[in-house]
Image (cartoon, rainbow, N blue to C red):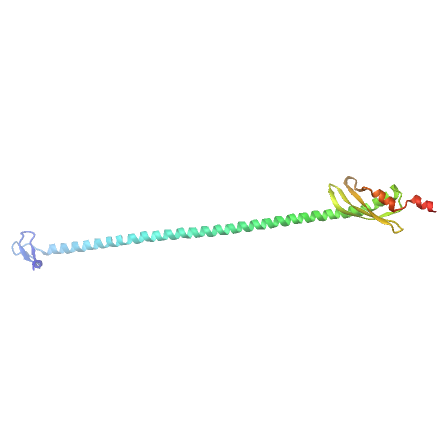
Length: 214
């Protein structure tokens, strides 16, 4: 029942809650109730945006935090993938370079061997006449060189091998020779090694022996 009464702010008289005027002093209550209601509305209106604003701020901070974490994860994944790709490319490039280097070395080696074989073959061919001339003119033997085979290189322009020698009677033998490529003279020099001279003398007749037979 006490809530059904109010007090006049001017004279303090107790009046009904819905009274618009004070019966004692005639004070009007309607303005106070309007002001109170307007104040209540303004307070309610002002508190609502504050509550909304205060409610939105945590969500904004949370969204920024989530976005930051996602960005960091994306950067880490991107860097990891890029690093892996670069490492694979570098490894592949290194393997390719090694293969190309090996192929180049092998190609150079084959070209060098082919050139050396060609030189040896040419020297062997030219040495045949030199050995024959040595046997017939220097040692006066009735024999001739059939072919020269080069078996090794002594380095520089010297080669080792052997010469096959025969005569018309079917006698034949081989002697070790050293072949020198005389580049400055575009010529070939041949030396019969060791006891090759004795071997030839014991195998073949001299032209003087044949003259004595007649």
